[in-house]
Image 1 (cartoon, rainbow, N blue to C red):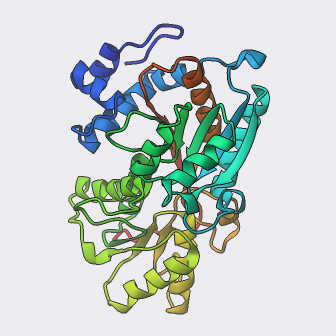
Image 2 (tube, rainbow, N blue to C red):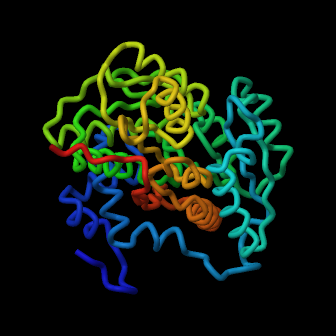
Image 3 (cartoon, rainbow, N blue to C red):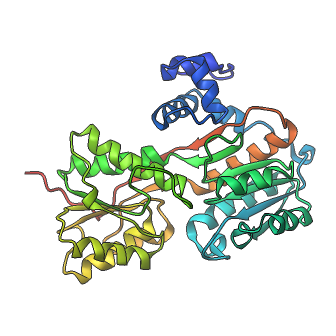
Length: 358
């Protein structure tokens, strides 16, 4: 079903497109916890296909000075590097999108890393209050408790690259699940069946602290592609890693030391793939002749690697754009239903995957 230009998409339209009930669509949009991840993904993709997300996220375009927001905060929830949003090419491109859109709407953007404050709620709230912000973009893997603490300030809030089940809050994400599934499906199409995964969390079970939602969805996409192809999920091929090359290098070495056989490896992001590539080379394994390799994010440097890395491209500036416009909408209509905006991704095929079809 394709929605006609200019027509109004209803909850019934989305329910019909996703083959679920109207009540299920409502529960997804209100972030109820009693909805499976598979159903949530189906509803959000149906809404995106019908233009629902675009219609909501783009309201207010062209308002210029009429925006209720004059200053917004780009609050990055980093636990490792307080300058991560400006040093890391993934976050810096999102910040570029935020700043470009804010400039069009005559908003000022204030940047602040808040990871070190999340263990002290009073200090966190005092710091944000002193910033005198009209709206907040909370960027990165913030814990549910942190989200709830910031909501106490009654400042319009949008999560960027994060989603918290059970809390009514807007969020902007790329399609992590579909991107990972597409990457692994491509490997399977090229004849690979033993496909390793680096970058946790990957194991099912109770949600541990600091579990990152986006990586959880990428791991789920990896598993779904295997199961759809009739390939059992082999947890011996999983290795947990932080999202930087040194940690991924160590994780790949552990994988190799265990002696498990794999012909391909999917890294949860490009930095993971870069670290894995180094470990593979040190072990005398060539990419892609011996092991095919795929990353996720499409950061600037990976097309210049040897071999150039196959990866999942995210329009990071679009994520920043959508987040600012959603924050503007939230400031002008505080009581509207919270939604999750999904930005599409695409697989970029370069030189790091080899066919091993018999």
